Amino acid sequence: MSTPLYQLKAEFFKTLGHPARIRVLELLSEREHAVSEMLPEVGIEPAHLSQQLAVLRRANLVVTRKEGSTVYYSLTSPYVAELLRVARTILSGVLAGQAELLADLQATQQEAKPAS
Image (cartoon, rainbow, N blue to C red; front, side, top):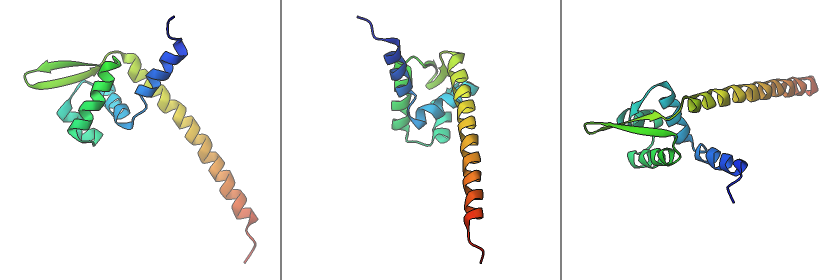
């Protein structure tokens, strides 16, 4: 019996469920990067970045290209960059809704304060 699509999707999103992996994918959405270029941008130890890149490689989200001793990474599909853009749009809407709610709560608190 094959794995249900929803389970495969869950595994896919688990792969995306790490801030360093998201940051790597964001960088690669712009252009291919060498590992040395990503290190200061991602802000983790080289060994940890290597582990995160391996997870992304196993999930077939990134591919490598070697030039001399330098390894370059790029996205396997432009849809990965599109997914990150869609996530940003969704989060912007959620945060805008939360900011509106916060403003309403603060306004309610100001109205409820007794006059000094």
